[in-house]
Image (cartoon, rainbow, N blue to C red; front, side, top):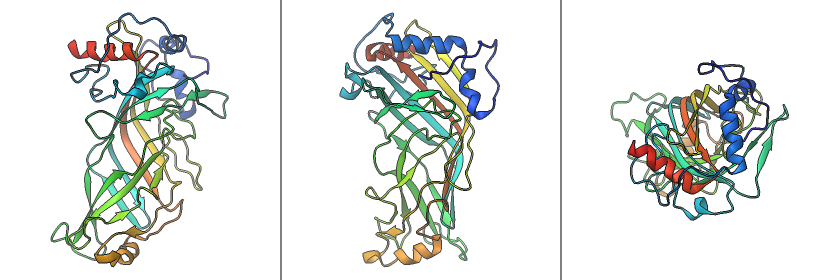
Length: 324
């Protein structure tokens, strides 16, 4: 957890503050609860097995957390947790092409912090744990809508013929999850993706990016390392102790904006017969494009993650929330 000193607990939920100081607005009770997690407080009650119903507040949407996976069950873990994040707006800029997000994008996964205890230090002297991500059970880690891209100079009479549909797909594991890098110039996670392009002439395997050469996104709520930098927004940070006496602590981030403009974008591949349309797509979209020429903005992002020192207690917390 964060090692910076806590601020006094406010009577009501904290208002947004300058980005690099927002994490200090966690109420004292939340910081003490996090300290209790690190010290390994004995859980009030514990059960085994995964929750069988979608958990209730404050763990809404976490029914697919991989609680029973061997990675989460490893007794060497010092902390375990679950995350659900929903982005309601935003856009990709890839070369000369803008791809808007017009439907929610959802991320969900479990995570753990093992005995090697990786952590990240920030310029102000504080630090944050960096977690290993575990894919969810029975659901995709990344759920993104298909979006339509208009072709420059062509009137879009027949979608999918006079336009292109694009879908973001995962191109590898999510890594370096650092949820409390809130407001810092440091990525919250690394997300490798590829863009699947659909058109009647493109065939089934037309992509920008691939598993071997993905678009590696490193979104941050602070400032990016590119020139010129983009700056995100950490939104409002809040917490909720477990309502049924468990040691789990739910931390929420509301109205955040995560940005990145540090990634390059390769040219298209697999488009048309024997790749015959690759160059046309590259010319139309302005690809390939070097780092700094591309960007992504995940706006109106609401994320909730829960932390616990004990997988049995976390499982019980989610199960009991469903019962209530």
